Image (cartoon, rainbow, N blue to C red; front, side, top):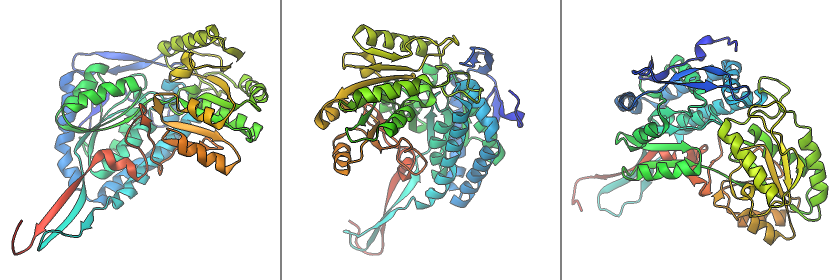
Amino acid sequence: MSLEHPLLFKSLCYVDGQWVHSRDGASIAVQNPANQAEIGHVPMLDREQISSALEAAERAFEAWRQSSLDERAAILRRWHELILRHQEDLALILCEEQGKPLAEARGEIRYAASFIPWFAEEARRLYGRTIPSHIHDAELSTRKVPVGVCALLTPWNFPSAMITRKAAAALAAGCTVVVKPAHETPYSAFALAQLADEAGLPPGVFNVVLGEPQMTMQTLVQDPRVRSVSFTGSTRVGRLILAAAASGVKNVALELGGNAPLIICADADLEHAVQVAMDAKFQTSGQDCCAANRILVHRALYEAFLARFARAVRELRVGPGMDERSQIGPLMHQAAFDATAARVADALDKGARLLVGGEPHALGGWFWQPTVLADVTPTMRIYREENFAPIAGVLPFDSIDEAVAIANDTEYGLAAYICSNRLDEIHSLIRRLDHAMVAVNGTRFTGHPIPFGGMKASGLGREGGSEGFEPFVETQYLCIHHQGQRY
């Protein structure tokens, strides 16, 4: 991997403006999922070193919160400019450690960068309000204040964007942060830290640490200096984080798993519906919490849709992310590969119809054939579980009531998709779906101005948009008495 800015490829954690090794020499290998080759080794800090990062963040907080919005915004804008200047290097690093096709990696870097100027500017609108007073001779008002030190725990499927979506909001609001990236994809986080350093973020304001996962999570979440925890990852781990944060009564934002339905109504344009299904299911090789895992097709279109969808899926090009022609990369690790094989076997054992794929890819390693399974039922794991793989499960429905029942038949409530040309049907579906984000006749719906997040077991709180500040600010109430009685 040849970079124009070689300093972006760091193999050290970033604490208090310094690049640090683990004190005991502990490290972990990072693999390229396309060939399992070692990219390098990164340090695994001990509990005291992680605590020192929190100490640095706490020490830096007072000066950072007192800095003006203009000062913070100027630094954040420089960070944004540096990310865009070095976006090709960042995409190469991301592709190498995560495995997604290079075109998607480039898109993620641009997506990651977009959150920074948005929050730098939107922080100017963290307004308080004046309250008509019920107290004689007193003025009442509120203001938004930063909560303090924030722990940001981010996943491997979007290793750059999930950092900036959280950190930009926290930093713009006046908080300091300690980021714990996934140990599978640390290099993207270290590269962002390098550019944050070059942009002029003061020591201690932005820190990146790695350590044994359970210990690191507990240390960050339970430390009393941490006032807000923002996590993106599985619902299982999110529940553990929520429980761990409860004793400290911390702000918690959780962006968790999904099991998105795509509802293709009888009046939908068939060719367009196929393209929507392709886009909704196979981005990031299906390793996406918003992926359409359950594709519901009205029976009138069912067989025609299956034929066209299977043909399109069969034409997807599988390969290493560095190959510009690749559309589907490898699964992230052996556990994901094994879970994919088990889900496909379970569906076939229970009567699913295999139309495409269904087996490991000829490339070997962690590559899996893009797969279409028809006639999926609620008894199958592929219907019930979040499916982080290039596997599409398709099932028919006969009425809108039935489609709604199937779509809502999940503990998750993150995203849903609809294909229809009838406005009355579209709005009826939207009102009845227990999913926090609904895309109609398309799949592009995320971005810096929108409130991203889920209902039910898909999480708490929102990221992006003005709502993205909520985990990182508190409302402070002021009651200012003038001369006279005080009650």
